[in-house]
Image 1 (tube, helix red, strand yellow):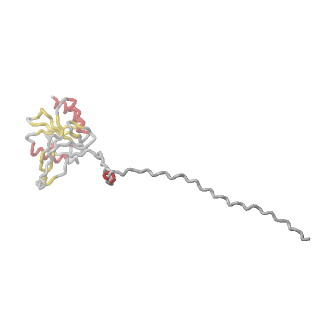
Image 2 (cartoon, one colour):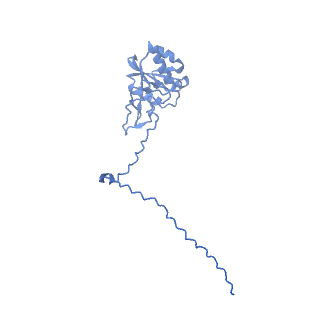
Image 3 (cartoon, one colour):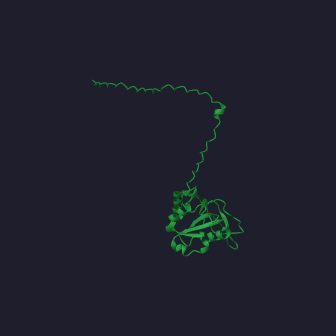
Length: 215
């Protein structure tokens, strides 16, 4: 008898896995924006940066020294405002003092109560035939005179000071109006011209001079 072959049991076919649908979030409705006004839609001009304002740099005070260089008469220039020389020796009446000797004389005059002015005005002086300069007397006493003239107190600490030539020219032109007292160290008084002054005083005898002027 023919043998019966056992029947193979059929395995159930695996069902294809169902693809899960991706849960997609519902799309949010876009916010409807109101249209801007036509004026607001216009592009505004870009603002320019404000220009940097340059701050003024503190500069040193500018002044005209009494000992001015010689000026030709063709230029016809004469300083009309006074100045008292260099810096660093204080002020008196708004004028800058030009040397230690001038500062000392000024202090002694102030202590003695003698009214005075520093470089109150400029004078035109002729140094040579075609050379003109401006000279400002260092100190002019107020309300006090000598021989019916206004008193001018001038000084120099060395013989190379260019003010000496101007003082000589000043006395030559205005000697009838001004009495010049010249204060300087002894070695300077020995070398300068006699035409520089009406009266000379050593720098060591300033107190004696001021006492006489205060009388």
